[in-house]
Length: 123
Image (tube, rainbow, N blue to C red; front, side, top):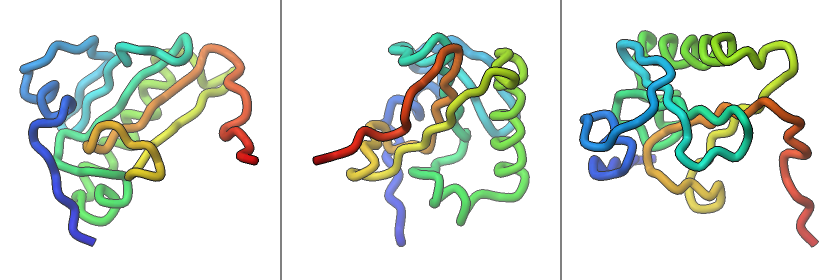
């Protein structure tokens, strides 16, 4: 599958410094920052600095260094934010059916309260 990356998406603008963010931690290949519309007491987004549309795009095309950096940053954010003991959720939406709102790979780290079931049953 060919992935078309839009370099005008909000996360690309954050990475270029055009839009401010509340950085939690930045590494060589990734950025973690607080969601401006948090859905839980802890709501941090983690994005790669590379132009990847979705997790599958990243998994197929990113370098080993980018993948390692990204995964390690997710773990570091959980440790820094103190959610390891009580639990947390990791969400990555992809495409139309996944309700992906920004076409740049991002994961949501959510925690700080009981989050309920992952999906609502559809009738």
